[in-house]
Each structure stands twice: as structure tokens, then as C-alpha cells.
Length: 116
Length: 110
Image 1: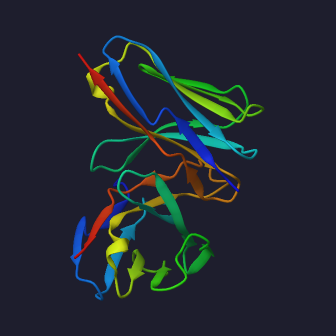
Image 2 (image 1 turned 90 degrees about the vertical axis):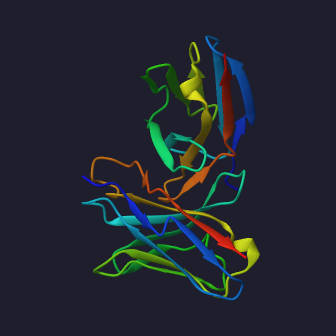
């Protein structure tokens, strides 16, 4: 059973470009979460999605950031017009959701975004 | 405001010694998690604590939860170098998002 998959693992962008980060949840998991980790800090929640629905986006910056989890394919975190402050590690986690017998979120390897 | 605080932030300890990492949180919660992160790596789930008085042990690590005090501890017994990593606690406030602590960077030396 493959774990949570993220790609790319490393992404370099120049200021003003777009960054697209992809996340495939564990098999059987329908809930996806995105977190951001700045250097030397803990993880900060960004957004929680289920298939075709955004459940909670309270941690998403109001501008330039968007997320989706389509019916088919991976979840995408999109950052438009990146700035240096967007440089961070972005982690995706998945879970089966409440009532499925387990509540643990399993994390992917992360995408390390560097904005030049 | 939902807050999760860990202490110490940094911990340098000798092999064979015992120590405890503390995790305090601000509001009643029904779930607390401990994760381990190695440098440049992802988070590995260590423990899930679901009720007051819960205690779980895996190898040299033992985690406990006191919901009345809003406190969880991660106890390290007879530390070895392989335990060197950053340890995070995270709280689920029944909102399906995890609020993470600041992390405790543990370094075990001979």
C-alpha cells in the first residue's frame, strides 16, 4: 500500500511564476490536508478537502493560493505569482475521515519550494 | 485562540539518560498526536492519544495525555543517538485540522 505521494519533491520558481504542487492520498483515503512549514517552524494548516469539495480553507492566504481535489486525479495546491516569502516545505496529508476507524493523518514527503 | 506549546524547544541529552518533552494546549481537545521529523524529511506518526489518562509506549518512547490539565508528555527512556530528530505534538480540536506545536529538536550525543 503506497503512502501519500507528492510531486515534485523540489521546485524552484522565480518571483512572479506559478507553482503547482500535487498530492495523491493513500489508497482508500478521501480526505486531504495541506500544511506549510517555514524553516525552523512547525506546520501550519492551510486547507482541508474532500473529493470535489473544499471543507475548510481557513489557513489559506486570501490571495494567490488555491487548492482543488477533483473527482479524478491528485489534489493540487496552486500558488500564483510566487514571492520569496512563499519559500517553504508544503506537506500533504490524508486520512480516511471520521467514522472510518482511524483518525491519524498520514503525511507525504513534502514539496520544498524555493522562490528565487 | 487555539495554541499548542512545547517545551523545551531544544534538547541536548546524553545517551542513556531520560527526559520528558511537554506539550500544553489551550482549549479542550479529544485528540492529540505525536510526530517525529528527521531533517529534510516528512512526518512520521508516533502516537495517537484519544482519551484522558491514555498512555502509549513504543520502544524507548512513552506518551501520555491529561485532558484536564491540557497536557501531554513524551518521555524518553535511556536515549540513543537514533532518537535524534524533531518531535511535534499536534492537537485536533474536532475541526479535522491539526494545530501543531513549535517542535522540540532533540539531539542525543554519546
